[in-house]
Amino acid sequence: MKRYDLRHLKDDFYDRMVELIDKGIKVGEVGIFLFEVGDFSSIQKSADVIRATGHDLMNSLKFNEVDWTVVVKKVDEATQKERAEKIKAARIEAEKKAEEERIAAEEKAEADRIAAEAKAKEEAEKAAAEAKAKEEAEKAEAEAKAKEEAAAKAQAEKEAAAKAKEEAAAKAKSEQEAKVKAEAEAKTKAEAAEKAKPAPARKAAAAKKAATAKKAPAAKKTPARKPAASKTTKPKAK
Image (cartoon, rainbow, N blue to C red; front, top):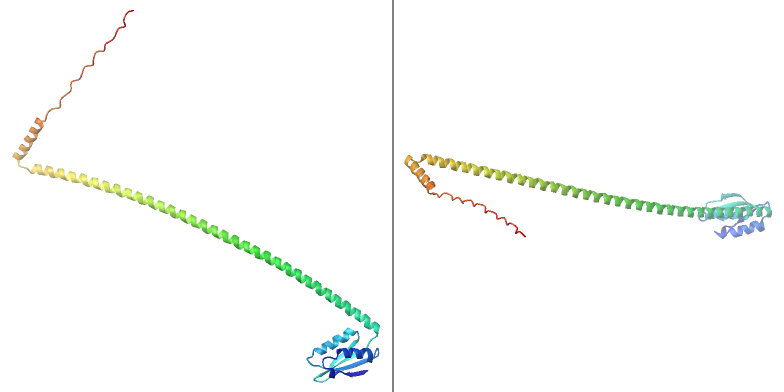
């Protein structure tokens, strides 16, 4: 077992640690390496470096508040090579898997993009269809309302004309009745006035009326003309 103090190298002790493992420790021997913790990233990095060389990381312990130790057992070259090949294979497999995941993620992203575009297009077409249907419905409703208003207006005009005609007929009838009544009243008044005259005056009016009727010339009768005798012309003898 050998112990190496690498604290003086601060955060640059990794290459020196590998060199000491390769040249300062025998196969199967254990080496203890002391280094500064710093920002704590050196703890994980030191372990990763030892695993990368193919040696055994026996332990990784806190030494004090600022220092850390790792215990390493050196292995033979064949084991190192085998482990290196495994690490390499694992790395290749991880890279392959990462690449496959990247491709799958890209394909999924592309599929999602296409699906999103198709959905957006479908929604846009649906919205356009709904807007068109709404517009057509509003247009049909407006036309129906206009037609209904026109029919109502025509009906109102028809009813107004019928009412005006009825009122005119009623007025004419009223005027006719008033005229007849006025004539009847005038006749009655005239008859009453006639009856109210004194007897001599009535006789004189009657006589005057009779004289006027006697003086009126009689209508002359036009004598009927006799039809002219028709003359028959006899044909001359040959």
